[in-house]
Length: 273
Ligand SMILES: Nc1nc2c(ncn2[C@@H]2O[C@H](COP(=O)(O)OP(=O)(O)OP(=O)(O)O)[C@@H](O)[C@H]2O)c(=O)[nH]1
Ligand SMILES: [Mg+2]
Image (cartoon, rainbow, N blue to C red; front, side):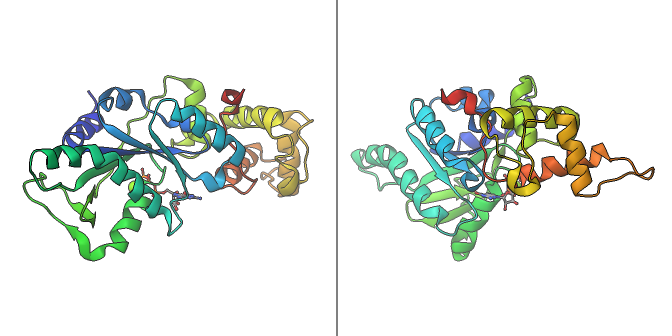
């Protein structure tokens, strides 16, 4: 077992509810099968992060698909200060049953212990920092509950582990790996940039034909090589011999896509039919 998974296993023992962050642009590529196996018996809240970068119509469809499997699925911009309210509500609902059991035993209902889990760069720290800041005075260490872990006391009913579980990446499925590279969750150099660009342009040609019109005033009817040449020409990306610097053209297009500069896109639209 990898160290990352062992670490997640240890943390899972301490929590009642798992908050799993998926990237709204490619939620199915962000699901980790190993984690699925480990959390079948846990209450889980699925949060689609970065919905502001994703295609809204696709997000709605992905949410409906995910709801077939998970009770609670929310799309939340984690850079938004109001991000927390909806999560807080979902946590209370997910923990209700546990607290009811405690009360049935004559106990005082205990706070719902939660942790955040997700792929690299999905927004785990953004969420934790937002909560921790709001509740700076409530950050506390609860010995007994933990082994040196810090719990953020969100309110009397809700504790959040202050270190997230980072999922180990699985590169076995090439298409998933490409999607994760395109959204910036795995290092792009796992796959040649040229392959990523060709995949992206072919995908955009099918689902978002006008994707390059605002930023580059380009259509997608040309072949990929010609498109990159035109981007190099527009942005004056030339090498020392004065030729188009194709490698920089690739990097620029990937970066602008990833940062949302080209617009809002989702990468799993083949699932929408
Ligand atoms: N547009 C947008 N950006 C977001 C959102 N959530 C997080 N980000 C940005 O995504 C980047 C990564 O966020 P982090 O919170 O550091 O992600 P992380 O999961 O902790 O990343 P690692 O610790 O590297 O695994 C930052 O630049 C955030 O500002 C969101 O909902 N929308
Ligand atoms: Mg982080």
